[in-house]
Length: 419
Image 1 (cartoon, rainbow, N blue to C red):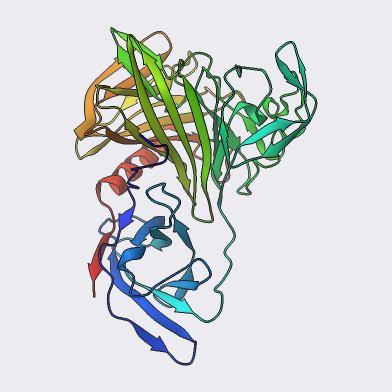
Image 2: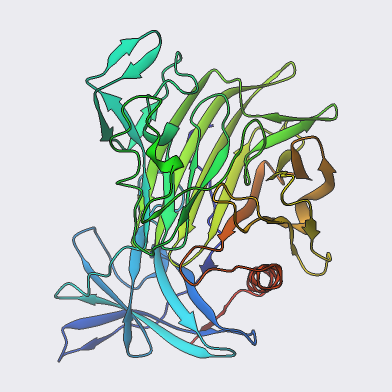
């Protein structure tokens, strides 16, 4: 398998595009038009719609100016490499809805550039250069942002090779990172601002003792203790009654594949993942969209892997495990309580497709769910909800309401109608 190949993004996909017409006054040529319908009795802010470029009524290249409108209002758009083959094959749009609202959407090819919308997502991977290698530690030097790396075979935990120990991604709501080493666990950056902050986090932490993000700052802090657990939504498998993370591999390639303004993503290829006496390949995409707390996890794995297991770290300060009622396609498992490193309320949740469900489980470290890939593919979501985020959720009832509304949105996507 090739890294970054064969992923299908589960957004709202527009299958067909329609007639074209020109607006002589504006210099715009309409290359797509369709109607969108929110069937739910709830507000749906920041829904992402994916329009296949092949369906547009125009030949396009990267230099073309594209404008999208919801009704008469211009909305953000982003070219997207949906299949990971370094060719753009979709156009992402960001639309917000009132309850039961219908919104017509149009796409134009224009003589002039449209509005440059501020990005609300960000992903990065920063590696040490000009360092001093002392007793296996990458000391001093500076961090440089890169788009792609084959992880050095000698890299291990706490050696300070990567800024905050691996790649990071964020929306205007929350940030995440995962440890790009044998731990391969996902952690949480709690944010007190809707600004994008990861580019500044850990920039001057040049020795392993200097992790400044463990202390509260104006933007927030690392709010979660993961240890040897699954953290929040980490990838593993369940073998002989034990959770086995992606710890032993032959090689790992990590790529920042997309970077806003609507979606940011990290793609990672794990080659030769050791599971018992098997050696398998695993490709993942972790993506986040504007205005969302959710990270979407897209997985492609060798056919001989019979399950992917994910879950949530247990915490004595948050003993209650909350599970959905198995009504509808999408379900969740969650933990809520005073489990943040700021000693306040934090909710963590995994959303999974009932069609992939095998069983729930629990061990000393985790609450987890075992899922079966279909034809080697699997998608699930995870999220963190911290009470100190802007307009944060600070009680159990509102956390449950957040999960229920998210479940409804996943189970009832916006309807796309041809005009």
